[in-house]
Image (cartoon, rainbow, N blue to C red; front, side, top):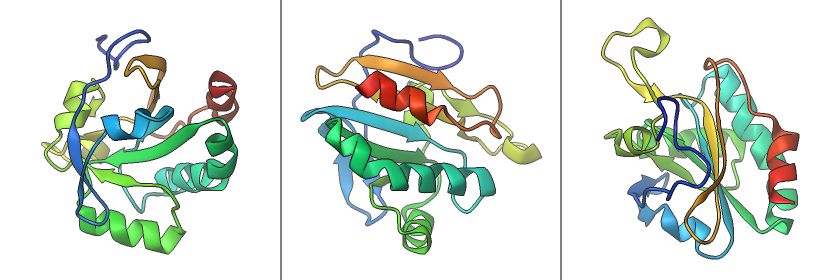
Length: 158
């Protein structure tokens, strides 16, 4: 792992998190049948995160045709993620990393988010994990206001 997230060729950590319906689900379950696009985002209901998750929502069909499952991951509670998913018609799982195990394991901790000392969020990042459990693509935003290159993600899946 680098200082800025897992690198390509690294075995993806197998962590179980709660989804927006408070069901425990292993992240590895998302890449067992194909590719998983793990999209870590700092916070539900924030402007850039909403735009990013809605862009993935609108691309789910196309990414699904490339045998990829999109999964959003944030440190928000399952309750907040449920409201966020409903308000924005998110059509893929949102996982709650409320105890920050995933952001630590994936190397994408964002300490003191938005100037709030002691509050650690997820740095905006995207990891494509293949069915073999290895990272095939890794991108970490230089700052939380930068969205991923959606065309590049699609290209890496194609």
